[in-house]
Image (cartoon, rainbow, N blue to C red; front, side):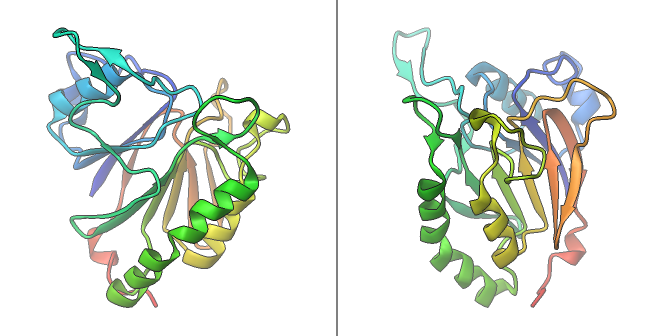
Length: 216
């Protein structure tokens, strides 16, 4: 399964008339936050693939459609915050937002994020019983604490994500939020059984579906 992951900035290679030529073999799209509705809608329309996303801390909250109605999310896309889904055998979950640093939406204290993780436990343990693994991919906006994050409060990662990886061992944790300006910036880090990917801009990941079987 080939996955296109997106976050934070609209890439000219993606937002292009040649998107189908470049990414036509993509099976799934995952959005990790801070992207405008029309960008995500363009990707869905041009590629014709399912797109799951979470909001970032600078999320667009609404947009007026041509008929005057107000849309509160990108059309044709699925908000997967605090949810878990099975997409063709790939178990995916999402957690939005950043560390709380002001009073705007999609920001959480460490305690609040721990609560969100804890309340996902019943479905995750059901997955572990049913499929032999709790989760394959967790998409987030913020990174885990100490991995691809920074020291300022806004860009600190969540310790709750470290605990999540320790307990549920997803194959990937894919995040955005941390901007990369140098070619040699660290994008990929292994933490235990999980590969942590900063998808700032975009990345293409390939997962061998034959390895998605039971992993007790």
